[in-house]
Every structure is written in C-alpha cells, then in structure tokens.
Length: 237
Length: 115
Image (cartoon, rainbow over all chains, first blue to last red; front, side):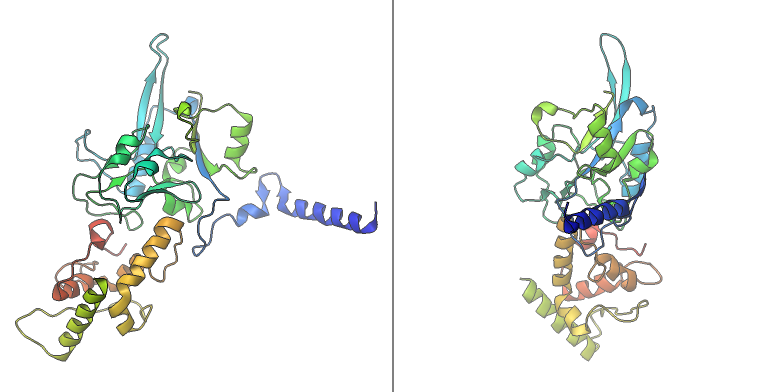
C-alpha cells in the first residue's frame, strides 16, 4: 500500500468516526433541521411507520392533530373535515379486532395530484403531498381520486385559524404531515402524542429509526396493489 | 390588473394624505410595533401584494420559511393593539383596502390576529 493511499484511508476512517460519535449520537443529525431559507429537497422523503399492535383504543393522535391544526367539526360527521381518523378493523372469521389511525398516505405517485385540474394538489420535493389552497377551486376531484378517503372539503366558513395552518371554505384539505413543524425540524403532532405506536423520519436516511425498522421488520402499505409507494407504512395489520 | 389596483391604491393613499375629504372615512395608518418595515413606504404601498404573492409560492411549494415577506410578519407589526387584528373598522389592512375598494382574500384562510 503506497503512503498516499494509506493517508486517504486514514482520513476516511477519521471522517467516519466524526460522523458517528457514539451509537445514537451523530454529528449529521444535529444539522438535520433545514434552515428557513433552504428549499425542501428530494434527498429526503418524509414518512411514518405505524405499529398497529401498539395502537391503543384511544384518539390521542386525532385530538393532537385537531389541536395543532385547528380543525374542528360541527357535529355533522358526513360533511365535517377529517385530517386523521381512527378506523376499526375486525376479522369476520376470527373476530380479531384492531384500530389504526388513517390519514393521507403521502404517496410517491399520488392519484390526487394526477387528477387536479389546476395544479393545486401537489407533492413537495421531500414527498409531502399538499393542497395549494391559493389555487384550489374546490372541484373535489382529488377527494374522489384518493383511495384512502383522506381528503375532505371545507363546507362552512372558518374562523380562528392557527397562524401556521391557513384553512378556508371552498377548498380541499388533508393531513399535511404537519409540514410547518417538519420545516422546523420537529415531528408531526400525532407522532409526538403517540410515540409508542408511531415513528416519523426520513425514509431515505439509512441511519434513521424508520429506515432501519422498515429494512429489518415486516411492514405493509395500504392498497399496495395500486403501487403508489406510500410514505405511511403499517406494521402488525 | 394588479398593476391598476396598485396604482389606484397609491393614488388613493396620496389623496388621503393630502386632504381630509370629510364624507369618506379615511384609512387608519397606525403602526404600533416594530421599528421599520421590510421596505420603504412607497415600495410597500405599490408592491406589497407582489411580495406576498412571491413569498406565498416559495413557502407553499418549496418550504422556504423566511420571515421577511411573510404575511405572519405583516400581522405581527400591523395588528391593532386594541383588537390584535389587521381587520375590523380601524384595521391596518381592512381600512385601507376598503378605502381603495380593493378586495383582499388573504384573511378568508389566514389568521388576521397576532398570535
């Protein structure tokens, strides 16, 4: 081995050691929160992993979402907005019952984006699927197209919105993966409320917990037959 | 269209400053917070809608969340101390827009109140 090559390997080892100070503590993670002037990039893809076996019979995720994003119902379930809901699953033959949260699955190939006539429904570079309410005309094609029933239409005037979550009548909305929190380097409100069953992270980052678990443990996509490559994955279904 | 609206608004403001017409309620320009605006007054009067439009697309589509031209930033300084809002009779945004007869849609979705 020539001296230059040896030196190069030495630098490589030093760099690797610098990136991984100790298990669970890494320098790169400290710089993970994007600075406000930097645009979201396709290097990241945000996702969720939901362990249905650990999902208790509560609605902590739903109420956390409601509080964070300021959406409230009018007591009319047929027309009220719904960003996240708990669904009950029951095996007809065995009677085995489970509950799981269901929200926008943040697909890689979102049908809601395909059908939008104005371009209001779009996928951000980091994989978060959003509605640009400035140009949404409220046609509700996306509501029809979504196989998960994740989108809802705002039928009634809204007041008292949260400063970071604008909402208004005549537009469609759905889970934003708490994009305003993600941009600050935080995790979505539902994950913060229920860390035992939900994990949030970058699917592309090989050192993230979500990447590691998806790689080593079995998981499923809802309606995997549609090949949408969802950002939200389930375990124990 | 926005250019014409801006011109009308600028002219209306100039007129408002020049004379008290009496019969028409004047825009209320009372700024209670902040040291200086993000740009000069003539520039803000003429181009504030362009700044907001540009910023909104950058934030919505790209996730750029700089505060210089953010609507939240506007509300932060310009909300009235009494109501905590830029809307209402003496609201910074609403009183001037009413005077200039230019409809704004921002606050149908966005919060008009200081957090």
